[in-house]
Image 1 (cartoon, rainbow, N blue to C red):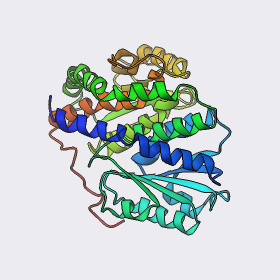
Image 2: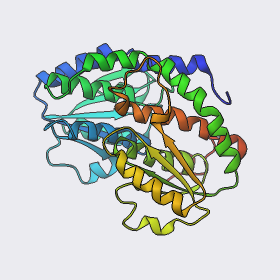
Image 3: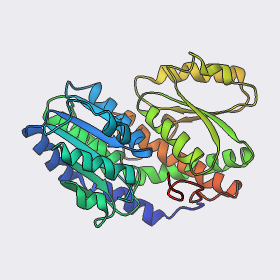
Length: 333
């Protein structure tokens, strides 16, 4: 497959699952300790990636949990954030400047700081109280976030089936490889059709809303310099639908949680008013070895595996490397 190293990919996914015992110990410490709230503090993709797990807590628990944009949080902090707080950070490189600023702020406030990255000598790895290291370049952080959230909720009696979830996650590397293989020709066809398309309209809901935000901003905009609109499915009919025309490219991300009816409504509308609708439905992808019980929780991970093939083929079809930047980490700002 184009731009795909199977051995490296499997190694990266397995490295995130291998953190389970460390994550469990950390969740047990948080559960038994003084901490009263949790903040996922991110920037760009790491903020968006935390949104499903903010939602995971908020729909199951009375424990206060927030995902926040770090730079804004430093300027306008939550008054509840302090020594009784857990601050969770993630960075692929471990060098994200915005995250480093927020980490310093969290340390000054006395919060317990936790960092997920793949580089042990990076500033984030050496700056947090607890670092959990995966393989270099391992992405996404969903497995780590999900393990931490599910274990902590299980300890609080607010999530049933943690051991069954772990068994599903153990089957995940090979399952995601199957997803990648199934998605590759679909991604190739999309890229060939849209090599000259300069605007895409993206919609998602539930635990795929964060992913929709991420793919719009961090991939199509940052890595391909494409214009996008991104909107939550529940908000689509409150203004954004007026942008849809017959030639509008829509990318609709459909998960397997309780918000699926919101996306069904968007799909119905889109198919009536556009001739260019691409539905990425995680339910359409087989996950060998994974039970049906927790498929909904895994939708962000499945969606990431699917659109990785879209991105790689788009980069080739458009002759625009995913590593090319004009401004990000290139100029002063």
